[in-house]
Image (cartoon, rainbow, N blue to C red; front, side, top):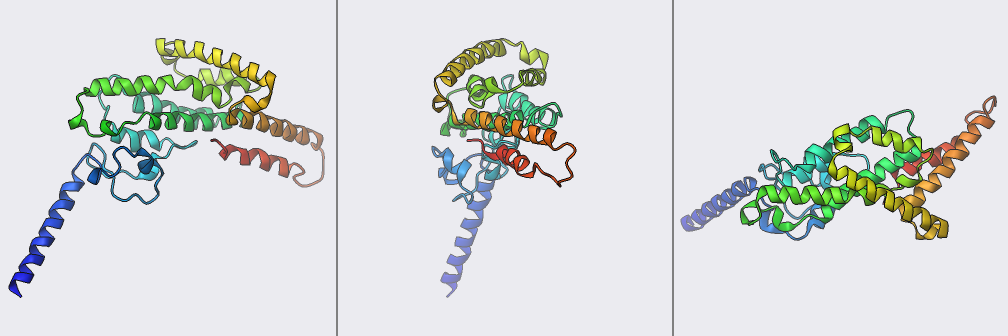
Length: 272
């Protein structure tokens, strides 16, 4: 009886020790997620806890790319890849910065159309998804990497920047109307960032993408990315709603354009 009790005590001490050790590990417990970032970012009930480089548990729901949330940058990826203090810290110095600017400043601007708001949502989701696609399982375990932290953060910085032109144009930037919408987007960017060497190269690529998209549009809409088609479709609904509002300016009917307005509103959550 005494031996059985002793074994139970020893077993309990081992379990407590392992749990305490896991809470302070800046790696994925059991490495069950290593090489499987889709489990981190898609599973609503992960098979084991995920801990950040600071030792704190990460809420995996924050790791899902979203069209109207910036949690991905400061609550997820920056805790998996530690670039704090690095010159090339894309996650907080650029990604989080402009995610907040686009969400709080540009999106709420009264001069921005609902189509541009859809573009903002689709672009935000695309940029976050692109970082996820470039995520390497070994980047999480800093101690096992031969690559320096500086080199790793520079790689993520470059990969994230390289995704900008396609995310901008595949989300419908070239088709936003009127053209003043693109001007509003450009003015939301800090001057130093807008005219940096990286941005200059991106602007050229955006123009090239726009030329290709417009040629594809001339050949037929079926060749365009799905989010561009959504932008074009929403513009049609917006125009119909505005026309309805003008036509019923003096109407006594209660909310005659309700259905059209609902169509516009429902389009804001349809990014792929």
